[in-house]
Structure formats: structure tokens, C-alpha cells
Length: 161
Image (tube, rainbow, N blue to C red; front, side, top):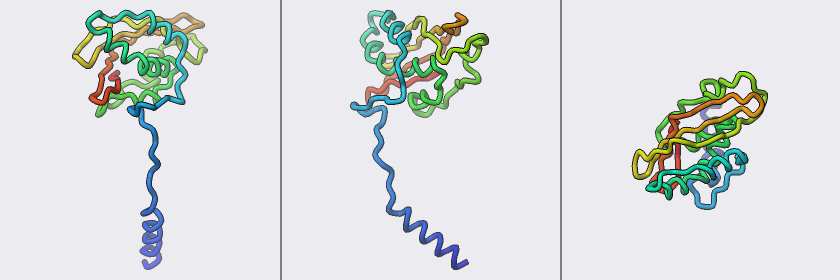
């Protein structure tokens, strides 16, 4: 019993002085993602996307985050998108239950983003949209029409999908 108390006291003393490092957060102004490579098909699709005139400025401010988010989607990196989830929401989509998983005849590591469509404002700080992916080798198509982007009070764009 005495050794358990001594061991506990030793561990508490060691851990008592430990602190977590200050890691960059996605909301930091100087934050740059080092883990997401933006795909050319994503950049091209977003460049060719026209948002409604009264919401164009909001959509343009969301584009940098959309590039990362959609590139992760296209390359089946769902876990990387968890950091972009709206606060308090659990991910409802995983690779196992995704539409991209319905690509039966592809061996490609990433799908191509064909287009972003049906951009509709749902609030002053939010919009919903549809994305269409295509497998580059089999040309199979997958649609996602339940995506929402929500601008947070700090200016960061997060997603619900």
C-alpha cells in the first residue's frame, strides 16, 4: 500500500510541472495547413463556381477553407476534416458510409471535383451547397447535397455534413 501511495505521489510530482505546448489552431490568422494538398480539380471547380450575387462576398471568404475541406473529401481523408466541423456537431459521414465509397470500379487515390452547385444562403453567415465528384479512371459520379458552411463569430468557416 505504501508503494502505491509513493508511486502515485511520484507520478503526480512529475506530471504536475508538465504543460501542453501552444499548438497552432485553425482559427489563428497565421495558420497554414501543412497536411492538405489542394487538388487542381478543387481549385478549378471553385474558380468556376458562381455564387448568388447577394452572397458572393461571403462565398469568396469561404473559398480558402473550402479548398482544404473539399481536397480532403476528394482524397478520402475524412479524419482531416473533423477539425473543420461545426462546434458541438459529431461527424455524420465517414469513408465507410460516404457516397465516394460507392465508387466500385476506381483504383484512384483521389476523386476529381467536377463542380460546386446549388449554393443557397440559409442565413447571413451560412450557406448550403452541393458538390459532384468523379472517379478519374472509371468516371463514376458521386453527389453530396447536404453540405453546409457556417461562418463562426471569429471569422472561421466550419462545416456540417
